[in-house]
Length: 196
Image (cartoon, rainbow, N blue to C red; front, side, top):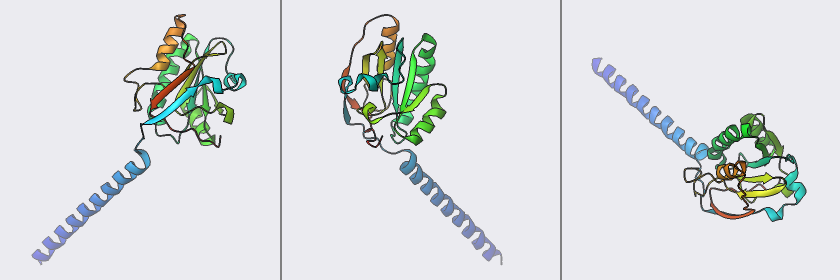
């Protein structure tokens, strides 16, 4: 009888360990599949402000001061790395008079952007306003494009090597001229959905 109880006890322990391993394995698989998708960081993008009409760039942009247009697409895995940085830019530069406009790829992105960026103006991007890739930004002062392109020069979603948009804003706020209306970049990009 004692032998059977020991055998039963070990069977229950091994069944528990096996169940635990299966649950952990499925959890890691789900995380890898749903959350931690691999990002192809070798995407190239040509950012050229000349392809936009003046109306496409100026929709929602205040005529005075500097405006940063941020392109937001929740289906792009790069967005989750970029969003905290954009929120930091908003916090740092809004007090200095910089306006921020968020253009969303689709309705789910619009809803998420409204939750994430609070008081900022969030709109759906029209087809003629679509960027070369996301996440990206356009900095406009007085109706002219000062910068168009990615937030950082890295092939991964990070601003550790530099913050292009922050540097541009610092120069503009210090009354230093800055013009980069075209940009060829390689980095963490996703194609903008063509259905917007």
